[in-house]
Amino acid sequence: MRQRPYALMAALMVPLSMPTFSAEAETSLPVPQRLDQNKDSALSRDEVRAARAQLFARLDSNGDGAIDEDETERFRDAIMDHAIAMQAFLGVQMRRFDTSGDGNVSAAEFQARTPLFDLADRDGDGKLSDAEFLVIRGILFNR
Image 1 (tube, rainbow, N blue to C red):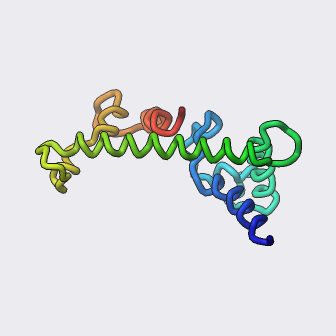
Image 2 (cartoon, rainbow, N blue to C red):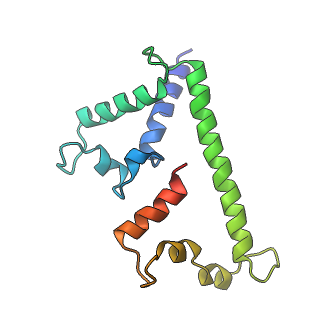
Image 3 (spheres, one colour):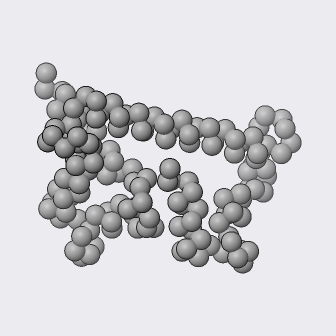
C-alpha cells in the first residue's frame, strides 16, 4: 500500500505549519523565521531537514528510531485535546459576546468586546507591547 508513507509524511509536515505549543516557541516569530537557523531570511533544505529531525525526535518518544502506532496515537490525542479545549473556549467566548442573550452575536456585540486585548494590556495604555502580547500568547497556546 503506497499511500501510507505519504500519509505519514503529511502528518510529519503538519506541525511545521501549525504553531508550536511549547516553551521553546515563546517567541512572536513566525514559523519560517524560527526555523531559519543562520538568520539569512531564507529556509534552506538543510534547515528544514534539521527541523524535521527535531520533530521526529519529539514524536519518537521512546527513542527507538521509529514512530510507532502508540507514539502516533499519543500525538493524535494531544492534537484532539487541544482542539477540544479550543472548541470549549470558543463556545464560552461566543456566549460572552452575546450580551443580548438572543443566541446570536451581532457585529456590534462582536466589536464591542476585546477581552483578550483587555487582559493583555497590563498597563492600560490601550496598546500591546511585545511583552504583553507574549503573555497573552502564552496563555492561549501553552498548556
